[in-house]
Structure formats: C-alpha cells, structure tokens
Amino acid sequence: MKRMIALTTAGLMLSGAAYAGSMAEPVMTTPPPQPAPVPVQLGGDWTGPYVGLSFGRLDAEGGGVKDDGTVYGLYGGYDYDFGQLVVGGELEYQATDDFTLGGVAIDDVWRLKARAGYDAGPALIYATAGYAKANTSIGDAEGGVYGLGMEYKVTDRFSVGGEYLRHDFNDVGNTNVDVQADTISLRGTMRF
View 1: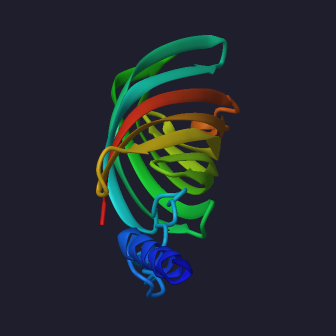
View 2: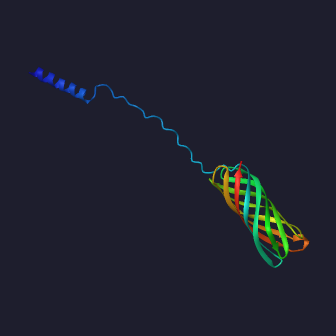
View 3: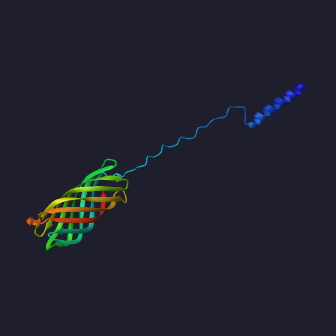
C-alpha cells in the first residue's frame, strides 16, 4: 500500500508539471529593437541667397513739414545660419508713389544693410542697420538706416514678413535740411 501511495503521489506530481507546460526551462524572447528617437529640429535653415518684393508706407519729416506715402520695391541678399544665430547682408531698392515733402519730390531710396537675427524655427526675428541713399528732385540725401524685422517660412522656399526701418538723412540736396523717415513694409521672399 505504501508503494501505491508513493506511485500515485509521483504520478500526480508528474502530471501537474506536464499540465503546467513542461519541465523544460522557459524560452526568453527579447523585444525587437526600438528605433532611436528623431531629434527635434528647433531651428530652420536660413542659409542661402534670397530675393523678394516689398510694399509699404513711408512717413517723413524735415524742414518743419511732414508727409506720408506709399513705397514699393525689390531686394536681394544672403543669410548664413549658425544654428540659433543668423547673419547676412541685403541690398534693397524702394520707389515712392509721387511722394513730396515740402515741395521736394523723393523718387526712391537705396539701402545696403547688414542684419543679425534669432532662428526660431520657421520664424526669423532680426535687427538690421546700414547705409541709405535717397534720390530727390533737389539732389541726393545720404544717411544711416536701422530697424527690426521678422520673416515666417510658409514653405522651405517662400517666406512672408514685415520690416520697420528708421532713416536719418543729412543735408538733403545741400540745403542744410535733415530728414527723418520711417518705413513699414510687408515683404514676400523667395529663397534659393
């Protein structure tokens, strides 16, 4: 009888192990490797040449008179993106729409500007400064120009933006009259 109890106990133990799966060691599988996370691009790539069109408003004051009018033009330049810092240069031409200040016609303005800005991804926020020359009906006027601007990339190649510029023209047409002018322009830029 002891033998029967021992055989029954052994049989129950073996059947329990067989019921649980098997006596073999379990096979451990490793999960498939996960791809490395893609780094988030914080800035946009602003490096390269560009050209564009501008349209805006000119407000000028000099010799005790003030006036305002429409300006439109074109520009071109080159930017270099150092990561978060973008630096570049630009040549710009803007014509006026029959603008006169105290009987003196201001025909157009040329600007040569340097700019430096912050790369905020699809947006570029920048400061600019340089040289400006205005062609008037009584002669040329030269002076400094400085301001602020912002561009926003609509696509990789096209951006829209705005720019405010302050001009300080000295001795317009050798008359000893200084003129201060402000322009606010909307800009559309194509990048290459």
